[in-house]
Length: 131
Image 1 (cartoon, rainbow, N blue to C red):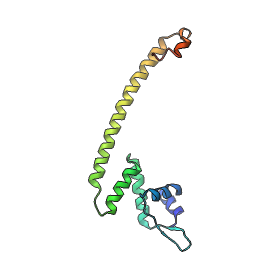
Image 2: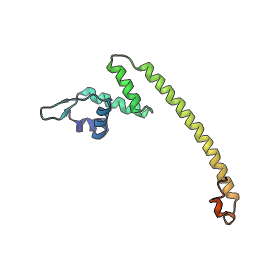
Image 3: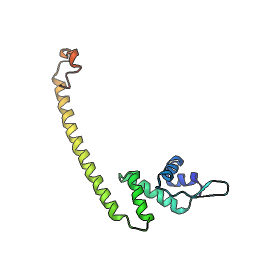
Image 4: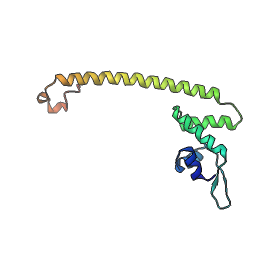
């Protein structure tokens, strides 16, 4: 199938497919005599895997590593499990950071409610945010 059809079936752009080829996530397809890319059904499955992996929080670099395992005939499952575990840890850290930021912002909102805008010194820029 040509690149446009693969893009439509996979729900990605032609540009994304070309980029996936460029970085090695998607194998370069055979070419027709007229030079068009000629993808097999396996390409559609690969692109669907890439999309599902991205939805799981994996980067294209990580996906390229996973695909390389499979291309070497090795099972990538242990590597995928490690990557997903690292992603969960990263998300947990982000959630903690967001909770801390929310606490600080909530305190600033409460502070702002008690301040008189007329008392704000021009040299301090804004007295809602203390120095």
